[in-house]
Amino acid sequence: MLRGFYGAASGMLAQQRNTQMLSENLSNLNTPGFKADQGSNRTFPEMLVQAQNAGSTPGSRPAPIGELATGVYMQERTPNFSQGDLRETGNTTDAAIWQGEMPEGEDGEQGSLFFTVSNADGEERYTRNGNWTVDGEGFLTTSQGHYVLGEDGGPIEVGNENFNINENGVITDEDGAEAGQLGVAYAENANDMVKEDSGILRLEAEDGAEALPTAIGADGVGYTISQGSLERSNVDPGQTMTELMNSYRIFESNQRMLRTYDQSMQRAANEIGSLR
Image (cartoon, rainbow, N blue to C red; front, side, top):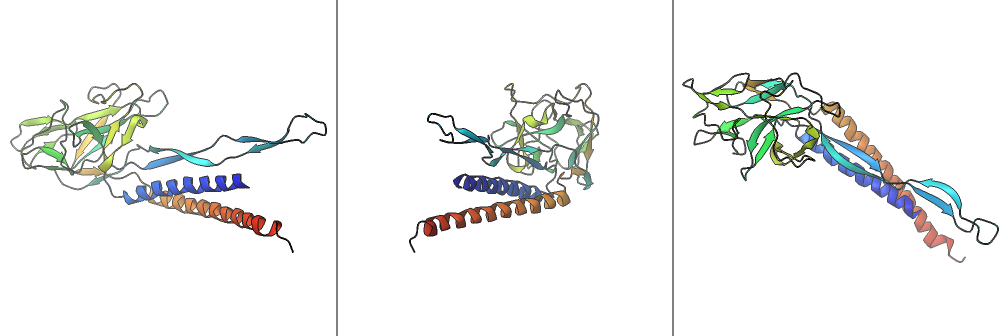
């Protein structure tokens, strides 16, 4: 019976984490470029239960009863990097990536593209959120004040908000002079990307690479930069609400099971051994 406590409790913990993940997805429904997380649950290894001293003769082997499940846990959260719809804003400081033809990796999945930005420490990071601004020094920055990087890895000086970005990511200022080329990075395996704060991602590849290669000139990689537009979050509110309600029901089922085990233990402690 004690094992039943562990199984029900692990199920409640797994659904609690799943509910938290789905709630975070819903809260970022209107965040530009946000990629919804998907959770994967996994069971703990099963136990083989055996009856001790089940044989009729001394020294006989334990008799197998069967396998017993030992609970479940959320193994990982994986972002879904599918393309979100574009929303036109008309702001010159907004930009979005529309992915075209993309090669398939070894796992059969297509890669993904990202804008290149810096974090607070000046390290290279990546995002799909193109909601930018121009700082007091005339540099293109994210809404958190970090530099948007060009193809050369440096910040892009545009002077003011009167600049243009063509479909290839080339930026020209109000005088028509070229100010730089947007840094667009290509991740062959998007599962190597790890979320940080404010829609920023970092590369955590198995081969130890710390930066993504540029998408410009990459074989089979096609994309278009759309100025004056933002990529919507790819969160599906209807599906997420359905999954959230299902998670609540599973949590409540495990809760009722835990309460039943508790009542049985209470009776075992208070009634079975009592003298009447």
